[in-house]
Length: 216
Ligand code: DC
Image (cartoon, rainbow, N blue to C red):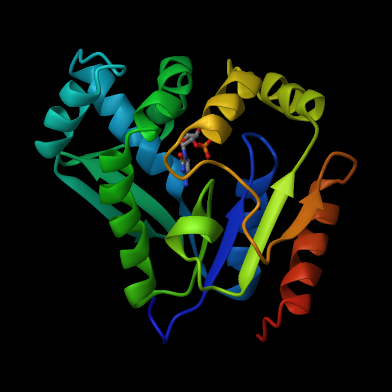
């Protein structure tokens, strides 16, 4: 891990509020916000675009070996392009929601994307959100948060956003896989956002970071 740049790791299940918290912390602390889930989604989108079976690991890896993946930053937020195409809202579709956990369970897929995630720290202070950021991507950072919320609250949030996303199924797959499963990493402060407003969750996250020794 780079000695000069700092990483805030935020992990948690789908729709726990971690993206919103990460974005707001990035704005107020002047960090680059990196959405690592977007990388797994982008690879999954490209696999589906090429008509490849996302459950066929060998075919996924062969296709991935041909992908030119570019990670960048725009307006303080991470971006991802594959083969020159910037991927944004299309990676949030129901089909990607359905298949992304399978693709993310392949160790070699994770290896390539984790290396790209760590690269962000070479040039930026970052707040990165995902499933294995505190446990695998930046295990040495002292700034680890885990944002949770009850399953009912998370399903309701997705429905309110009009998204077809079986969060419980995705979380089960993400927590039970062998490679870097979702878990509360040692040293994390856990924030349950079930009964908190966005503002309340962001404030709790900021307080937790201060407790972990964050200095502006
Ligand atoms: O954060 P998200 O829901 O957009 O992530 C989409 C999927 O990507 C998630 O179901 C599991 C996978 N993922 C992962 O395995 N590791 C990460 N660090 C981030 C996401």
